[in-house]
Length: 510
Image (tube, rainbow, N blue to C red; front, side, top):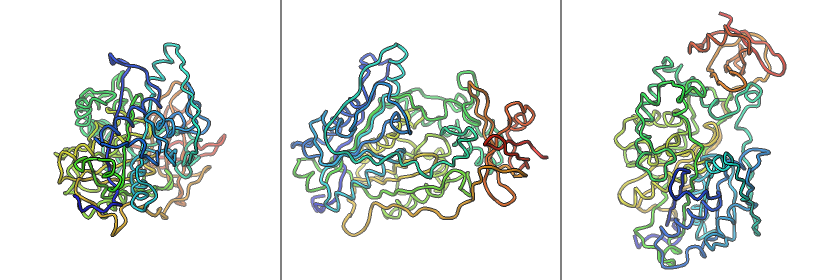
């Protein structure tokens, strides 16, 4: 490996940190303290003889959930400069501080972006850091405690904003579909319709997909819910495992109650040598791609995300390998369809002996806010360090299957001089017209039912006779229409729609 060009970007260190409220040594750390711990762990992981912290010229931070939506309020206060708050805890004073946009693709995409900066001479040591303390916020709030986590840190900040434009059609909000759970349920039911499966059989299939994930989480010391589950446990609807949005049971969706942090350090080969990082610690970045999907209702087929598939396909092309060469996978698993969308496109069986997760997946390891894929990259780095001829693939999903970044890693060298290894994919242009208000007949594409304290929200997505997409609700007092939806097979049926009070209401016409 001594022939590696000086400008080559390499991962030199990774770190993870986690605590659970029932741990004996639980200390209720703030997000900034968690991030400082994990950045310190990544620095230690470099096994360097030099001052890695002092050499960091760029820190890119992942947004906590509490600063990821318009008008959100951090209950215990927040840092005015998240990346510099992380840096000050390890003695780093970077020239550049970045606060990334919202989305689970962020850590993986940033690895590619910062690696390209290093390859082109704009940086020499860069860090990606993210943290969440959602579980601690809930724990302390229940006990009546309110610590002050606010911080004021001097220095520049490149705040990239929320980056949510074009992800969600406003008509979905008007019809009560505002959460990832409800929106992914639409995709899941569209896929179920294409497969001709009933609800119970489909829930069992999700259980069979995710049971092995839970077994990996049970062995992971950083997991938020390290308990192995059977497919039947995950699929069976019970009071504890209730339906959160048809077809999902509670145990099969991303778990956001976590206290977790992860960090990734990237350096040029020249700087890594100067800092005394042993070459056996280096991991090469063979490809990173970044793709964006159409808004939810614009997608011609709501059962798939072509942008996600293209992201993986292009990453393999850049790396010059095929899927058979991949030894380790971590496919983003906030919901089952985020996994199957990719695995089915590339012929990866649910029981592939390589496994589909390195962490245990978002329902069991934990959905660490926007930062989950940093944990996946950290696990991938450790895997290929121990298996020097292997490749690892990390797929990172953001929004509502809206954004996707793919990374391919190996100890085998990657040539950053002869060609691009970080690629942003062009956006799709073929899309459906979305119509906010509509009166007339339409045909059901997909649906979901979301139970809630304020009542059940039953929503269909349908196509009009002019091939426009609409959303429509069953009226709250329309028990007959709700009962048809609860049977689980409204696909292809004709509905009669009327516009009323800023939303569409429907009944079945046949």
